[in-house]
View (cartoon, rainbow, N blue to C red):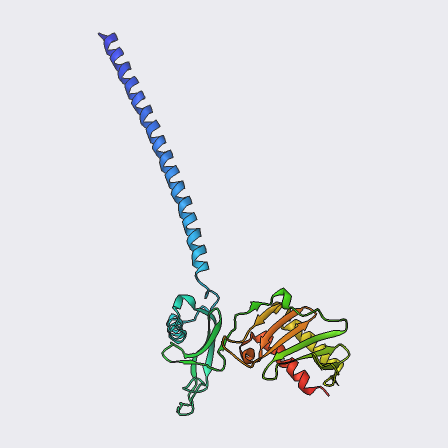
Length: 293
């Protein structure tokens, strides 16, 4: 009898050990499954979070704006620009936002019939951009008052490449800059070159007798300053680009400008809409022509 009880006791102990062992295995397996699941979820979350951050960064072109730039001002300006340009807000970008204190209640943009309070008004100067235009707005501090700065706003022309067959020859040695103008009512073509010694020579292309040749001078210092301007204004960025006249325009003059770094072309009726850097070069070049003696 004792042996039987002993055998039963041993058998029960074996079953208990086996059950415990199986339970442990199942627990470990479940734990591993949970660990794997948690790890996978964590990895997926990291990937998704990273993707979301990258996406947010890509879709947030205004991330470089001041931290205190009010959302109310941003929304108001984008709505105003959207109405003005007849474009969806998704196609507009706030390029720049600067805190300003305006000298009057008209935000320094009074029209001829407007009376302005003379109190100082804290606010913002905001530049909104599209692919071919920038608008400059003045606002008060919360965006409840918005005014468009017409003079500071500009329409940018979309350039087109100059066909290789239409590019003029490169400059000769000693020539700093060349302008070829053609068209207009008379339809004549003139070439004006600036030499590094200060001579400014102008001839009419096709003038068999060379009767319209003129030779004037500017100082060598002026030549050097102009060369520095070409580099500072990155004239080479406009290499082989043309800014044509609007479709349907007539009797305009086309100017082809060439430096040692490349050629750019524009029409006289589109000069005011050239990129600022290029417009600065054109303005200085015209001053050199006007002041030469």
